[in-house]
Length: 136
Image 1: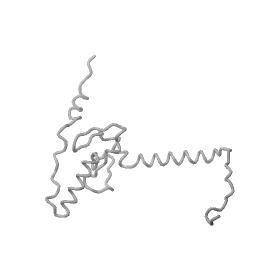
Image 2: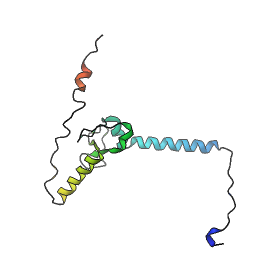
Image 3: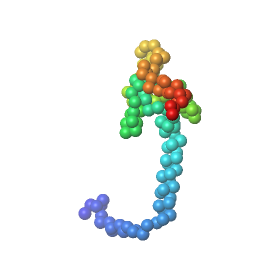
Image 4: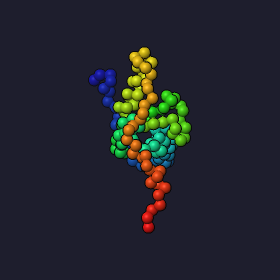
């Protein structure tokens, strides 16, 4: 028998549920959820349409992991409650945005030009539609 393979006594399981422990676990889970919801990604996904602002690709809940929050000014600590420093980009456009910034910093070309954004504007006429009175 080797030193690491010593026989250990079997663990005994406490089969009596501990209600205090369960309460602590639930409270911890609720606190963790609340902390996540306060994060800028969760806030951005609540207030912005799930559309990449570069390529105009739209996303459903099942594919939200492919949608990233990009800080327009590059400052990850600048997270205003109205989301004015955020834009949602798909992972491909987000990678491209940062690659252009790195290339420009290394002298590989001009600074990233101001982009025109997506040519498709899925919510362009929404304000006008909301102002119209329903027929009835």
